[in-house]
Image 1 (cartoon, rainbow, N blue to C red):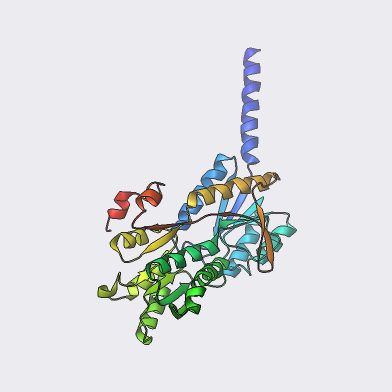
Image 2: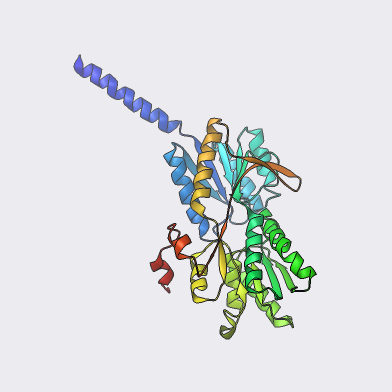
Length: 332
């Protein structure tokens, strides 16, 4: 009789554990690409948080193709995802994925980049106009008068538009007063380093005016701009960046790049994991604010970015564990 009771208890435990596993909330993570290293970390931190909260993550990567991202979005819905978390390739075209999800009653979390749709459940990112403002303010503090070149990413990414808006918002007064002259306003088709290198090299070869500062919207573009300069000019032109990439932090220590904008990935990715699980369970999302971006009005949670340069990298990215001193000093 005791054996029978023990057996029934064991079977009950197995049933509960197995049932919990089978009914784990499936979250679909739909990435653009791995064009910068940060997305590997976003992915890992997001997955870890969802797993910690009892869910599971199915990942699909579009590798920069909007049509492929739409196909993969449909696949995730068919595969049973209860929530889609999307880093859109194209903010406008990704609205089609949102419509597909809406028809299937699957909420969408727009991660880091905004999807041009009023039907997303929540948008989690950093204050991206503030990013552009901080870049321009830093440049103006160092070079209050001179020639400036803007180097931004594709307009298919709403963040790129916000970065440039923030930059111009800060620069406007100095431009109007004749203190700053814009010698170029380059908009790249993607966020890659190679394209930026070629574009800046072309600019330097054809322009009669050498910029005193290049406000590059992210670190990959900054790296391309740095590589476009001959060795004797590296470090002579102020170059901004964003993302606190390892290579750019090394450039900052070496003096080739002036600063980067630090948007800690951990709080953003973990918050997205928490919110995704709440959406899957139908729990109300706290802390979101209604914000308008053009014609789109969304529930948004925006985190605050900060400036990192040679004076404070130890107190910021190193202290946070974003990178280690040994990594920064390794020249490989």
